[in-house]
Image (cartoon, rainbow, N blue to C red; front, top):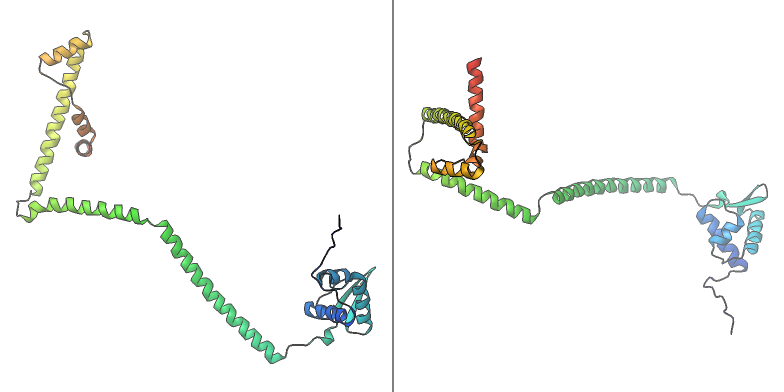
Length: 241
């Protein structure tokens, strides 16, 4: 079986090419590196041993600066050989940077506003919910319009005095009905306490009486009776006061 040969797409540099590559890399990065780091960052284009020799040679010629800390040496581009940016160009770059920052701030504000609007839309009702609300509102409008028809046709209105009289009669006769029902239930309990349920039902039928139906119970628990009960208690408090 033939052995596999490891191939690499990185071209190995030698001589002046290797030296130029290392020098340009140090100038471009403009920060200290060790020989191992330079060889690794060049992706093996220059072997480690060759990299160390080239770095030392460049330092001896003054093209780069060598700093030794213990047993480790670091190399950095000679700052005197690096091109500096003219003052007018630097000012121009600062103005351009400021313009870009201002533009970014404007865009950030627009993104924030759009995001808030999007969040508002997401939290709002859906199309289906809006259609249901519109249908419910139309139904309510139709009901209210039907209630206005008698008024529009010239039907006489009930005066405030008549309404007060109706409320007073309602409270009076409801209180009387409540009192009579209580009396009936007391006597009925005494009369049927010793009777079996079936005989009690037969007696109730023979007397032509009946208990409250489900509709009566619902009405008793409804808002009409609740409001009247509240008014009656308020009137009672005023009388006692």
